[in-house]
Length: 196
Image 1 (cartoon, rainbow, N blue to C red):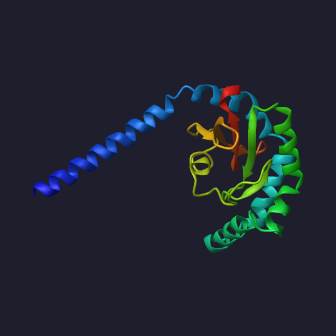
Image 2 (cartoon, rainbow, N blue to C red):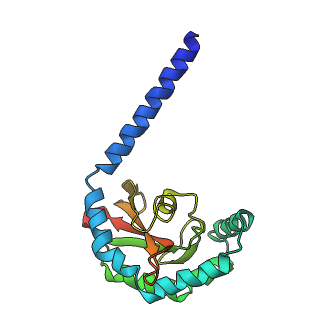
Image 3 (cartoon, one colour):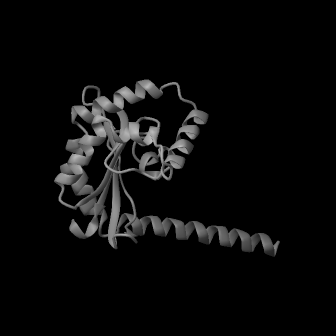
C-alpha cells in the first residue's frame, strides 16, 4: 500500500513538473518576438505561389503513402545524409521551392538559420538546408501546427548550436491554401535569437 502511495505521489509530482516546464517555456522571453516575426514575416512567405503550389503538388503525390512508405523514405534520407550518393536529398534540395527558400534565408542577413516546408504528412517539400530527417510528422513542429489547425504557431526552446556558438530557436506555423483557407502543410524557420 505504501509503495502505491509513493508511486502515485511521484507520478503526480512528475506531472506537476511537466506542466510547470510547459508554462515556463511558453513564458520564455524569446517566444513573443518569435511569434511577432512569424506574424509579420513568415506568414507572408506562406502565401507565395511557389510555396503553396509545391505543397499542393506533393500532397497529391503522397496522398496514398502509408506509414511504412513514410518510414522507408525517412530511413533513406537519414542514410543519405552521410552517403556519397544522395538521390532523395538532391531531388528535394534541387527543386524550385528549396532554391527559393535558400534565397529567402539569404535575404534575412543572418537572422534566419534555416527554413523548411512540410506537406500534410509532415514530409519535407523544400528546404534551405539539409535536415537530419525527411519526416517531421512525429515532431512538435508538425504536431503543434498542421495537426492543430490553420492559425497554429509553435515556438520551440532556445538551443545553443555547438558548431556556431549561436543561440537559436524554431518557429513553426501551419500553411494554408489561400484559396480555401484549409491547412495544407507547415513551415519551420530557425532563428538566431540574438539577432531578433
